[in-house]
Image 1 (spheres, rainbow, N blue to C red):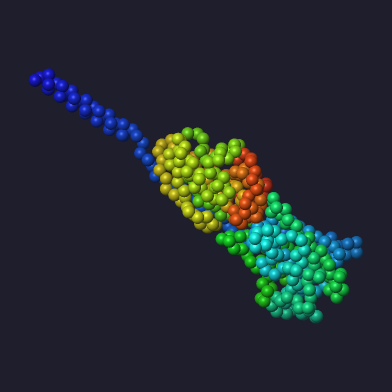
Image 2: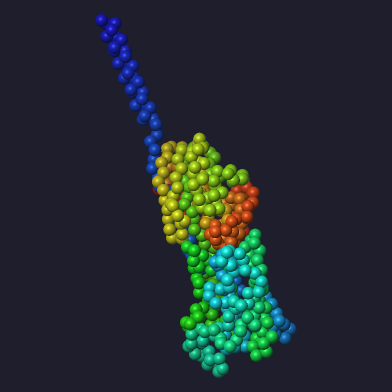
Length: 410
């Protein structure tokens, strides 16, 4: 009997010890912590993606920056399908006339997305600014109207050429007004601009003037005296590269290697290319979920994030976990923002300073927001096979990372 009681007591003691051990083990296991990571597009939208000025050289007798009859000037610019080139220059021997295409500007692509090249002179118009009487030059206050009885295309020849790889146009403007003696005139220095696109629409479809309405303080100096400085200053101040960002892929992982990408190595073929070129993170998420060092994968947002918008997602992590993320620079061929440094998953605060813009190396770059092969214009990128590297800020006039995206963990 005593032996039986001893055995029962021993079993009970062992059971107690085992239970105690299990409880201790549970206490040692770290509990998951919940965090929220947000991605905010903080860009200040600009109406124009690219702009500039042009001027002639005059001649030995007319020492002024004019495009004289028989002379030509040219300039280059970038544009994608749906974008247009606006420019303006004075009809020099008038009181207040100026040349400009009808709004929103020169049509650059056919409806099927192919570029328009060759002679596009039929698109030029001659406008009366309505601020001076055409005979006396006395100030007046009339609406901007097309000059009647003058065929502008006989006075100015416009020729477009196009480079597909860079999505770059060159416009050549030739003064052919000497062919119509009654309208022979020099052209003044001018201004040109290409409007940005947001949500499938031009941000400024009437960039310089509006026919049928009164003129403005910037186009009037060009029309009256050929002074392009006021318009140039206004347009330049409102010119800049903009972008949306894609829904962001967020991964919680262990170890010292970012599972999304490695700078200096080629795209691993796990779906980052889809994110970088089209903003689609589905394939990348699926690939990451199969990796042994990846604990969880999340996606913040379900649609492109425009300037002024924000998306966020909640994630769980434990001690020693890390977090990584990637979101497309939408107005590019294959760029993405990602953390450039390791980030502890339990970190709280602004991690924008640990974020950089990377080139996936899988598509030839074009001018951001003005490249016809970009997803923005439903184009097909030209493939390349380079390593993933940070984007060279000298390549294009790009805004700083913290002027585009703000990444915060709380």
